[in-house]
Image (cartoon, rainbow, N blue to C red; front, side, top):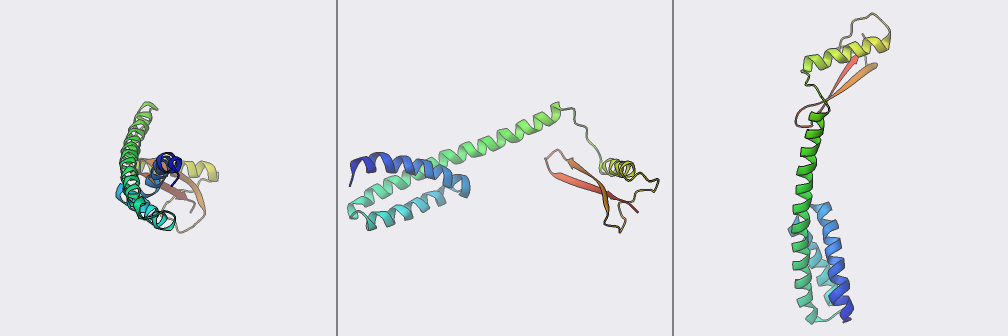
Length: 149
């Protein structure tokens, strides 16, 4: 076996690919199991049985890298969520009740339709005039629509 391949190329490739695979799978054990299966096939197809030691070492390396990557991914997700909440608070957002959001959508619909008809969101007409998107404190999106009668 080529020493440069064993001690440099395969460990670096294992680290990089385990980060990528962890980003996709979000499970360190599954990431390590995938690398174990791949390296096991490569060990018996290309090398001899003495390569099993390196298969185990590379699998442990993939598992440790996946654990570290998962820690940073979850930490980043928490920080991004906290930053989004802080940005919303500093942008002078106001809290609206469901009724207020529905009233705003109906008023916008009246302005856009240029008619004096009352707006009823329970209308059977599918001709949508206006929508309003509201995000609650958890970041969930609610869409209110108002239709012309």
